[in-house]
Image 1 (cartoon, rainbow, N blue to C red):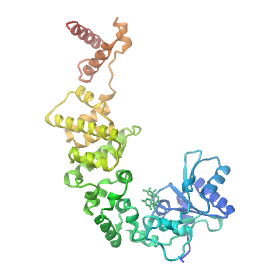
Image 2 (cartoon, rainbow, N blue to C red; image 1 turned 90 degrees about the vertical axis):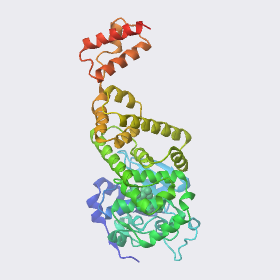
Image 3 (cartoon, helix red, strand yellow; image 1 turned 180 degrees about the horizontal axis):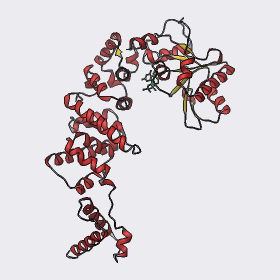
Length: 433
Ligand code: CTP
């Protein structure tokens, strides 16, 4: 039995008071039901690492759904229950979420990895997980609130900065853990232990990554692209030959590393200036990773990732557009603002940011001006003004307004008078046809 250690003061120090009260309340409800309840996983790991994390996962020795329902009655919360899995999500009025699961003990879910000794259901549940550092628990029942349970040497591994699996068949059971191992290693600046590295190599030799679904791999890739330094993770995946196991065309070299750094810089620039504007960061990095690939290779990789046909086709179409624009712009020394505007305005943000990362500093400026100035420019005259000038509404309005916008972007008109003059000129031009 491990030494008894309480982390109550750490909890009090790191968590908001209302969360502590909530956890205590849950402990009390569990106690009354005759259950044990624990906070587990990433939340506990990050608490010990002193890293902020309020994604709280609870495991119940008892029935998780019954506990969630009792909790719902006592506090003003919404719950979603998933009978099949014995899990529930509790959502508080302020949007705070809590995941509650029933300890999973089924032996049949452990092909070949049957533990020899008898284990409590908590211990079994933790044993099924990916790495020692993710297999810590904190008890929440009143008498032992804050008791840290470390069955597998997680505290030692946190101290030694090691990523270590809990059992030898871990990667066989779930090959996506190969990607997770590298992600956690790079996120925390840890090392994957020698034995775990050997297990990764064996799993790769058996081509196990092929046996898992593409959507699970895409999920893990998205997690990687969502980290602070995706480049470091991809570089390490390449070093361990994981990248080429995902797809033979994937590679990592100096120029891709540079592109990733550019993407990072562009995204932080963009986020700083346009906090409110949402885009899918993961897609920008996916474009980056696929940058050196030929179209057939991109196609086959996205097929591996199980992208639906329509999404794949849109991705291709837009990627092709970006490559064309990039090619054209490479040849130009200067460009009219209106041309930048008209070229870019219909392209999804992710693709524009990717293009920006690819461009040389002088040409990046074209896009930074587009984002900070040009895209907000409007003609002074509106459709109503055109009507007031005696024009009959119709498709011509669109043409005129677009011409006015172009002229304004390119500095050819300044005042309302200039615009009116231009309208007349456009109309005259039209009359010739
Ligand atoms: N887990 C696992 N195998 C996986 C995915 C998850 O064993 N393939 C376990 C891990 O032990 C993890 C828990 O399920 O602690 C929750 O998963 P997730 O939310 O993905 O992990 P976190 O550790 O919370 O990671 P992050 O900090 O990235 O959210």
